[in-house]
Image (cartoon, rainbow, N blue to C red; front, side, top):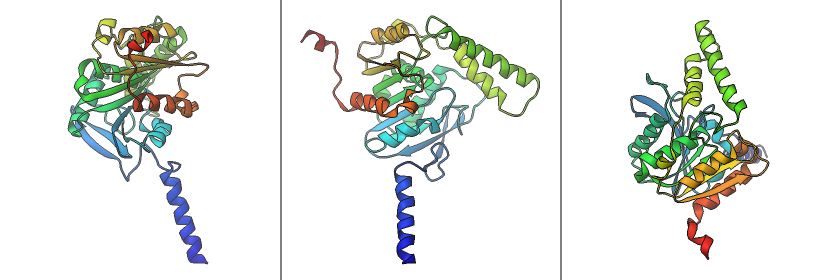
Length: 279
């Protein structure tokens, strides 16, 4: 009887881990690894098998923020999640954070991992990085999904409240640095908020250089202006558009079923270009 109970408990624990309920994404000692890229150690985790899908997180999170996506996509893809420099378990390095620098990190990561080409899913700041990869490193990409990205940092792209929040947090980080406060790594915090406050600066002409299929995604309750998302979509030659009604910037966490199924449909089906409008 005790033997059967032990077997059942072990089976249950194994099942919970398999179904992603207990896997410590972002701090999984069983699969977590480091790779040296551009002078810093970047931390990454891999799950599943199949066509590679690279996940790039937003500014304020890391691999752990991808939990709903890893759980979903690792069932049919080889999911590769990376902590961008200065976030999660990756080193910051001596350089200031830049979007183009992170895009170069990801391109060199793909090369270092001997991957021919990958699909890329980038959320928020990760969407910016993904689009920059499409502009400067197209040879490494199959398809891009860019959610909640902005091409410049002012209130013509984002709503004023969001711009003000970023400036306020950057000033707070600088004040805490001046006080030599140790409750957080305020140097990295300042870098993060300076990144959002003063970058990126991507033109329509640059977006026009992206040739791989792109799914441009946002919500009608996002921090990004709807017209700015349309600007991105209209300037990428091979783009599809998805704007979720009534959803917010954290839709990938708050409504992962909607988010993941939309992304999966784009990845798993042939790209539908503009010719369909005329059929």
